[in-house]
Picture 1: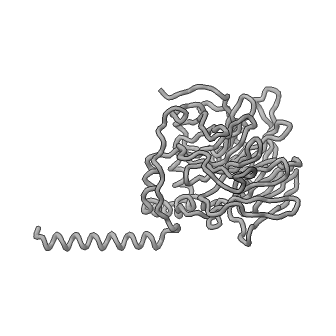
Picture 2: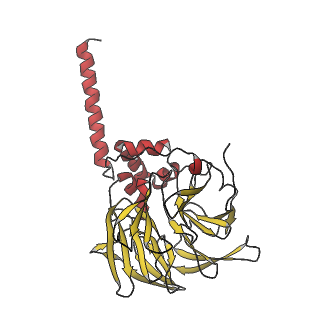
Picture 3: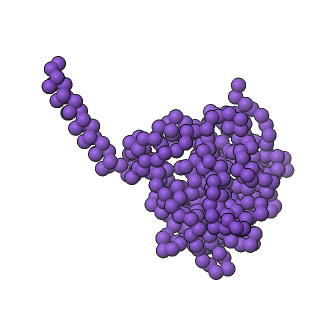
Amino acid sequence: MPNFTIAVVAAALCIALAATWRALLRNSPIDAANIQLPHPPQRLGVFAHNKRLQNAHKLGSGLIPNPEDLVFDSQGRLYTGCGDGWIKRISFLDNELDVRVENWTYVGGRPLGLAFGSHGELLVCEPSQGLLNVTEGHVEILTEEADGLKFKFADGVDASREGAVYFTDASYKYAFHDHLFDILEYRPHGRLLKYEAATKTTSVLLKDLYFPNGVALSDKQDFLVFCETSLYRCQKYWLEGPQKGTVESFIDNLPGLPDNIHYDGNGSFWIGVPTSRTLFWTIATKFPSVRHVLALIATFAPGGVADGIVDEPGVLAVNDMGDPVALYSDPNSKNQINTGLNRGDFLYYGSLTLDYIGRVPLGQESPIN
């Protein structure tokens, strides 16, 4: 083939690729940013692959649709927000393997983060409604905006002994059902907030966060930890002391996407990990074009992309110094694990894609050989 012909064909291919790229950008629902993240950690030591979540006991199987977060009350009853808009209460029967599931209070929408307040009320984050105060049969909206910006994705929550409520608005741009777009876009749309019941005021503690998710106060309540899902990290925000009002790294470069986080009262934070970081996630993070394609696919098949990119979910325990101490995972599962909660001798977990609450004994060793 003459050099001139080769040049013409090459030029035509370049023009076609450029036109395809422009069309992709024009039709993509996201504005994907370039982002540089560290390589995923090696799966050694605490992060080693294991099967500790396999053969979990299924509490309330078929009766608890998509339990995203979990919290226990003072009587040992378990509460969760479900995909049908109900807060369900789970009571343990005598053998503790069987449970009674009740429709406790209907809040509507898609309830996410849960925490009990200082007066025994249940605090609930419902993405579009905001921060809710829930008692049996009654729902009150505590706050739905801050600094003139309405919440679009109220997400994680925790409450102090003094009554202050700390919570996140994961994104001011995307609603819950479009949360994958926010993660794929890699732009800081989130905020960390504080609600004061005494004055009924809401203040913004931090903004420009990358999908801030779960929130958990420390034992002394001098700091809180919040997860930044799309950056694979958890941050520490100081509430007391000389560093009050500042933020620093708590644990970085996690082996998966962090979601909800709970403090167990015994020195450990438990973090739900919906999916591990796979080669696919590494490639998608590195190349915005891949994320544009995924976003377009998700536009036509909303659940298809999210379901297809989940691999080896789990629950990670981290001590109060930010050191990982235990990982419970299932290498064969394609269902998200969005929250983990330690109580007594068991680990409980919830998921946006399951219809039960899982329970496994703590400390069981099931390494992958």
